[in-house]
Image (cartoon, rainbow, N blue to C red; front, side, top):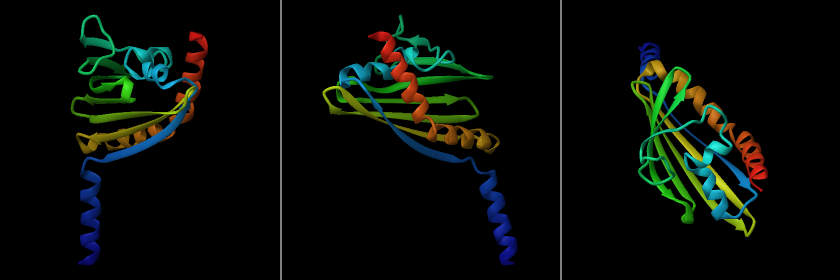
Length: 164
């Protein structure tokens, strides 16, 4: 009976939607006020790559503000993003995104001045599958999230160099 119960519990856990949470840190060689401009949907265009092309629903024209709503095309999926917190002076940004019937994500960005010319950035992703069929995708995204720090660091440094 014990073996059958373990098998049943294992089967149930495989069929339940998963939740993953991962963080990474990086250092931006810029003062907090300048670094903060890089973490809004518009500001990220400089460093997030060609796939990052927010299409703003609100506001019009699009700009980095709390309450902004925009979409991003991710391969076959279009995700809807809401900027739930945008306080550059406090170094805080937060986003909620969702892909209908697939997943919901939060992205929490916290910036802290290290000194007058550099800023520490901590990024935390939390992702929840909306259906167990999306579990593998959510787990793969979680793994990628965990490993994103060096890529973000390099892209942001290149962005800052082109803006000088």
